[in-house]
Length: 331
Ligand SMILES: CC[C@H](C)[C@H](NC(=O)C[C@H](O)[C@H](CC1CCCCC1)NC(=O)CCNC(=O)[C@H](Cc1ccccc1)NC(=O)N1CCC(N)CC1)C(=O)NCc1cnc(C)nc1N
Image (cartoon, rainbow, N blue to C red):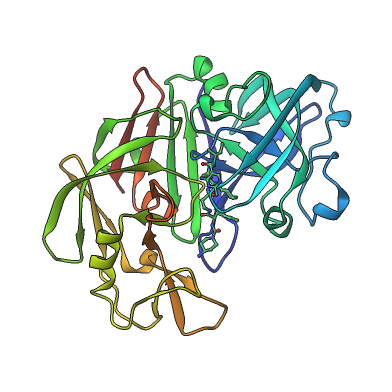
């Protein structure tokens, strides 16, 4: 099988996240989920989520599906890097993305979600596309949609073609040559502890010299920005008039009318350029003349994260063969 599904930005003003339509159960219930290579739980707002915590999200009702089965005695509880979290019970049911159907997918129903999920009414839940080792279901961990779908895919891959303030695509089971230019450069993936962890070959700021130095981090579709070592981040903002590292805004900000250099990162011998428009992420509040940078320091996180700001500058292949690799191409 092969399949394709849209990745649509949830906010027209800046790319905080992307959602993809999925169907669950019989008859199919359609939800808009955030495909997240930085985690491995598939969880949804559901008929079990307290009404006080639901604000416009679509919900999955297992009781309305003739193919749902409670996974008795199983629970899940997850905490994300931004401090948000959720927890609940587990069902298996039919689950499809882009026409790829998995009959007994573990679908984790939320009994509780944190406030930032309640207020984000465009996200009905997440599809974790990290490695199944990160799945939080207890007492037995469950497989991701990709792990379940892999045997029926023409090729054990999925690709991300995320776009700047535009609808992009996730493809499953094939590599669409019309979506990229030149060659795909593949590099090894370290699957411990379960992220798509790879090593970039270096970086450059604007037309400055390229610094060849290994930068190990995770490819994370569920993270909005790029988080890299402080030395790289200060080298970048040194080139931005009026940039400061703001404690109150929690990161590097600058006057929105400042000229930003592009940011270049290496994958093997290949080079990828994040254009200035992506690097000026958003005004700190609507209408403010102060903008928040798309590149921030990873010093408080403990890992480097290549989030959407970097991913949308490339066509990215998540290759699930043994051993897994990740491929990057210009587009
Ligand atoms: C099994 C756990 C699983 C692997 C977990 N994975 C992750 O946290 C990475 C994962 O990709 C998650 C997936 C997110 C979670 C929130 C909802 C959208 C998806 N990414 C993050 O948490 C990265 C930081 N968050 C972000 O990048 C969120 C994403 C978001 C999007 C839309 C709406 C709300 C939030 N963006 C913002 O908050 N933004 C608002 C501020 C703006 N300046 C930038 C955009 C983990 O590492 N948890 C360990 C963990 C726990 N506790 C903490 C404190 N840190 C941790 N890393």
